[in-house]
Length: 123
Length: 107
Image 1 (cartoon, each protein chain N blue to C red):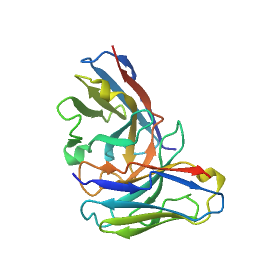
Image 2 (cartoon, chains in turn yellow, purple):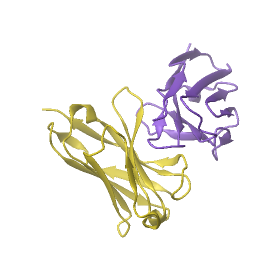
Image 3 (tube, rainbow over the protein chains, first blue to last red):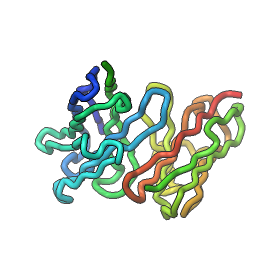
């Protein structure tokens, strides 16, 4: 059974940093891209970024709203993806989901999602 | 950036109704479009991908159509468990984008 479990959320002050983790199981993690999607309370879904597999050079892509502040990485030996968030702003407050594309590392929609972890940026 | 216009934002309907939700792109995306259902406090669930292919396990009352710039999600006979928020998503080019969402509520 595919499982994605996020952790690391919490309260952080504006300008601070936080690192989220996404532990994966039930599929070949090393062959899959991994994405992060966020959702502010009462708002819609916003794609944050993705990291591809080793076969695709761990290529990353980011939304304009987080580019230069957020970094996605992965550790295939631990079946875990990470989202390092720096220079956090109040508008980054959201539930952060990790998710995987339906088939490996291509252009596919998301068939499995984690339960989400809440990040609150506030003084 | 591909902009998406999803409509309506709110849809009031009754059990048994046929409902349609529209998603329009600012540029053509072939059939690289998915539809998700989200219930309060839960992660989204994939309903349809490639514009019209039903995800495994999704009831056949859900269907999708369209290509290029105009897409539609149809629920043929609304059930109580279908009251939720629906999102379209393009995965044709980065940044991948979602529609604004359509909340389907009980009339």
